[in-house]
Image: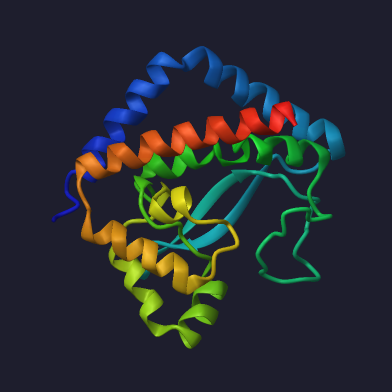
Length: 199
């Protein structure tokens, strides 16, 4: 199936969400940057290059959740669950997925879709495709905030596992499937946050 439905669907959901949740979003956009800056006086935003559809590289936006220049010594690596580089504010933001909020900028720009494979960094993409050439199949789809791998997999899932999930998504591509994944992503996120709060 064609993915021509994606851009209108993304814009509809984005517009509706911003209308309905505008007071909450405004509060988040004011308080989060202030909290990040007050902790260590460092930059509020963190940007990374990511590989999008057909290999197009774009800039991904996040609220900074690690110490300044965290990768100067390590280079491009996946963050660990209890990574010592994560700040106190960053830990709070990550637990609630609030560090991802600036990716709405990428959604408005069309770099990302609401649903699709999670985009990799160019360095990691090169490294993975050397060992797993078929991993490049993911680049036929627009990357997304959430997707099959993000809902049913784990952050630490190996590339071959992520590829299996992304193939499932590609074979079920459609408006109904995207809506289901968005709903499941929302429910699972709330469930995880609630479980963390009662532990």
